[in-house]
Length: 84
Image 1 (tube, rainbow, N blue to C red):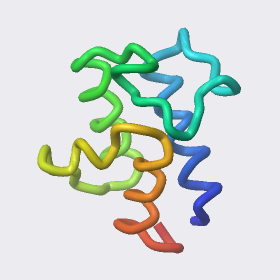
Image 2: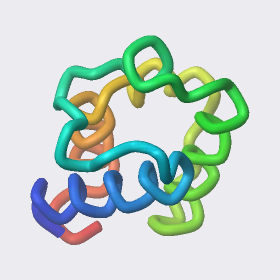
Image 3: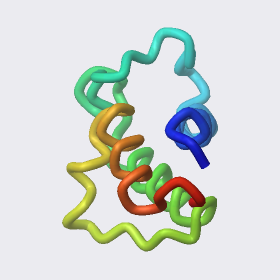
Image 4: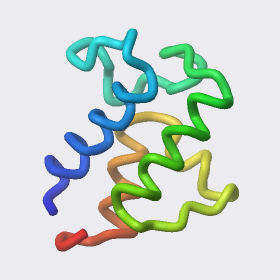
Protein backbone atom coordinates (compact mmCIF):
# COMPACT_ATOMS: atom_id res chain seq x y z
CA UNK A 1 0.00 0.00 0.00
CA UNK A 2 1.12 3.50 -0.71
CA UNK A 3 1.02 6.46 1.62
CA UNK A 4 -2.14 7.55 -0.21
CA UNK A 5 -3.69 4.14 0.48
CA UNK A 6 -2.74 4.36 4.16
CA UNK A 7 -4.27 7.83 4.40
CA UNK A 8 -7.48 6.73 2.71
CA UNK A 9 -7.77 3.74 5.04
CA UNK A 10 -7.06 5.88 8.10
CA UNK A 11 -9.64 8.46 7.06
CA UNK A 12 -12.23 5.75 6.38
CA UNK A 13 -11.75 4.36 9.89
CA UNK A 14 -11.75 7.84 11.41
CA UNK A 15 -15.04 8.73 9.73
CA UNK A 16 -16.53 5.37 10.75
CA UNK A 17 -15.67 6.15 14.38
CA UNK A 18 -16.68 9.82 14.18
CA UNK A 19 -19.34 10.08 11.46
CA UNK A 20 -20.04 13.73 12.27
CA UNK A 21 -16.63 14.66 10.85
CA UNK A 22 -16.38 15.79 7.25
CA UNK A 23 -13.34 14.08 5.74
CA UNK A 24 -12.86 17.03 3.40
CA UNK A 25 -12.30 19.42 6.28
CA UNK A 26 -9.93 17.28 8.35
CA UNK A 27 -6.46 18.79 8.15
CA UNK A 28 -3.27 16.76 8.17
CA UNK A 29 -2.17 18.33 11.45
CA UNK A 30 -5.54 18.46 13.20
CA UNK A 31 -5.23 16.83 16.61
CA UNK A 32 -7.80 14.06 16.82
CA UNK A 33 -8.86 14.91 20.35
CA UNK A 34 -8.04 18.60 20.78
CA UNK A 35 -9.10 19.85 17.33
CA UNK A 36 -11.55 17.21 16.07
CA UNK A 37 -13.22 16.41 19.37
CA UNK A 38 -12.69 12.67 19.60
CA UNK A 39 -13.10 11.50 23.16
CA UNK A 40 -10.95 8.76 24.66
CA UNK A 41 -13.41 6.00 23.69
CA UNK A 42 -13.56 7.26 20.09
CA UNK A 43 -9.78 7.22 19.97
CA UNK A 44 -9.61 3.68 21.37
CA UNK A 45 -12.23 2.58 18.84
CA UNK A 46 -10.08 4.09 16.09
CA UNK A 47 -7.00 2.24 17.34
CA UNK A 48 -9.03 -1.00 17.44
CA UNK A 49 -10.32 -0.41 13.92
CA UNK A 50 -6.78 0.15 12.62
CA UNK A 51 -5.66 -3.01 14.40
CA UNK A 52 -8.45 -5.03 12.77
CA UNK A 53 -7.94 -3.51 9.33
CA UNK A 54 -4.18 -3.97 9.19
CA UNK A 55 -3.55 -6.78 11.70
CA UNK A 56 -1.15 -4.38 13.37
CA UNK A 57 -0.70 -4.49 17.12
CA UNK A 58 -0.61 -0.90 18.36
CA UNK A 59 0.81 -0.63 21.88
CA UNK A 60 -0.46 2.11 24.15
CA UNK A 61 3.00 3.65 24.12
CA UNK A 62 2.49 4.37 20.38
CA UNK A 63 -0.85 6.19 20.82
CA UNK A 64 0.80 9.65 20.68
CA UNK A 65 2.11 8.69 17.23
CA UNK A 66 -1.51 8.55 16.04
CA UNK A 67 -2.53 11.98 17.34
CA UNK A 68 -3.00 13.62 13.93
CA UNK A 69 -3.75 12.25 10.46
CA UNK A 70 -0.23 13.08 9.29
CA UNK A 71 1.39 11.35 12.26
CA UNK A 72 -0.93 8.35 11.94
CA UNK A 73 -0.18 7.91 8.24
CA UNK A 74 3.56 8.20 8.90
CA UNK A 75 3.18 5.54 11.62
CA UNK A 76 1.29 3.22 9.29
CA UNK A 77 3.88 3.76 6.55
CA UNK A 78 6.70 2.97 8.94
CA UNK A 79 5.05 -0.06 10.54
CA UNK A 80 3.48 -1.60 7.43
CA UNK A 81 5.86 -0.55 4.69
CA UNK A 82 4.80 -0.35 1.06
CA UNK A 83 3.06 -3.73 1.05
CA UNK A 84 1.00 -3.26 4.25
